[in-house]
Image (cartoon, rainbow, N blue to C red; front, side, top):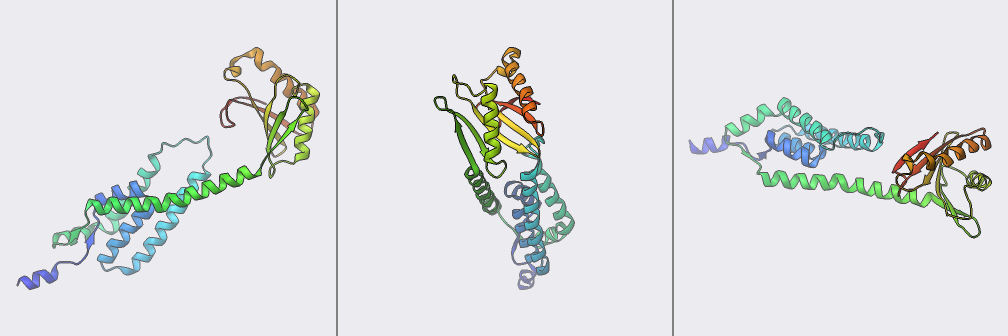
Length: 255
């Protein structure tokens, strides 16, 4: 009799619903795929294992590609996306595996420990983020390689930086000539400028000191300069971005 009962106890361990919540939240869609695949193996559904991995990989690519391509002006709290795909994972578990999981446990089947869940989550997280960091690092390195800086002036070295793949050196030199002509590139203080072309518009980032954006008197020379440059470049729109410390810290836009 005991031998019969032992034979009825299912072999292999499974992951329960809470493991899907924790594992997917910590490790991402790839971990969810692993948990589903391991359960399908124990449930005797080998055909679904391959399908699960394909879906998990595609989902991971779509989610993280979407995050990278998302416009910067859209701010989503960091926890929203992990909560969303974790909720989807637990929903899929309840639909496709919960019944078999409950049956497995009811007849004496084993479940994986939390140490297993945490370990899988960490490995899955590393597998996901290492390629992402590699892509970001490579992208930044390539972008920096395309940045060129030209100096203008004999005594005071004014600088204009630009992306060689975005705007030509001839156009940058023409902008520098206009700065000399208007007196912006003078002999007193070195100016640091970054020029970017967006269609027919020149977006010119100019380094200023903190607080200038709120000083009407200090802003007026930049307003006048932009007005004059509009006339010097009749075929192009001119936009000034006043920045502090770095290009991302735009404190005022004049257009």
